[in-house]
Image 1 (cartoon, helix red, strand yellow):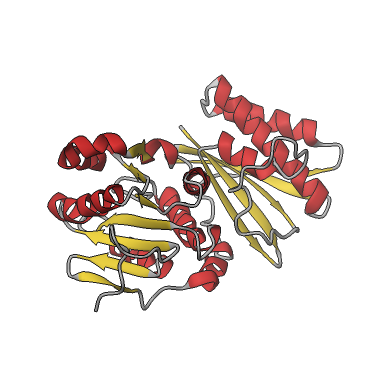
Image 2 (cartoon, rainbow, N blue to C red):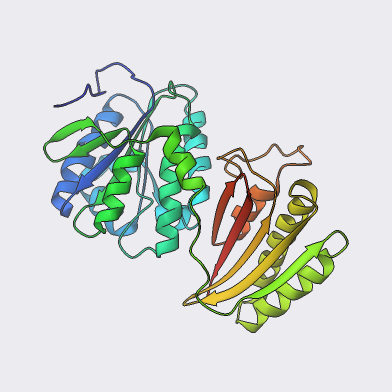
Length: 316
């Protein structure tokens, strides 16, 4: 069964968020080329954010039309998946109300397991990040041959619509807002190695910063990365003091290829999109989590009635 489709001459149906399950580059191009071409023919701005292995053949297949498409390297934009939603919002706003089309590939073969988990959170949050009448048609490609089956299953839960070679149909597994709540409350994996623990309270941020700097340098982070991480953790700890019960616990450990730091407190974050909206330049408060996402390789936020954990990864 096929759902209605917005084509070059069809009506604007509002926000559409579709998972495209493809097998082989020919199948990838068979869907993405007409998707882009129809948008261009209708005068719709088109943004393609995929990895370069998929960007190059799509550009070649589009020919001269490729010059009219905004191509973005998702490996750069989505280095931290929390930076993707602001880019789609900016793209929609830049069109001034006109219909727009996008292709977004946050998950590809070779991403780290923790990155994939946060990309799955991102995909679920995309259903809340824009209003139903936003004039965006967003197609999210998934390499069904190369990605693990559980990744494909999760795509079915986070996308209202599925696109396959045989057609387009609603996802019967789509979880909506309840799925976002499920992901936000899911426990993060326990540390796999020795953990350094630093409890902190008011007046102890300087000691926390010294501990972070010493450990980060010890694991081999570059000076600039040490500075960024220290600033990010100071901001998170300050949030714990202001909003998380007045104290908290910092934990630090290493895993293969990453240095992990975690701040835990008894507060609760109720906004699932926290840190994914760029605050106005004149806003003095509420910038902390946004800044942490800009400074760090990966940020994982889990919050329930028993407290909040923010885990930060620095790739080694």
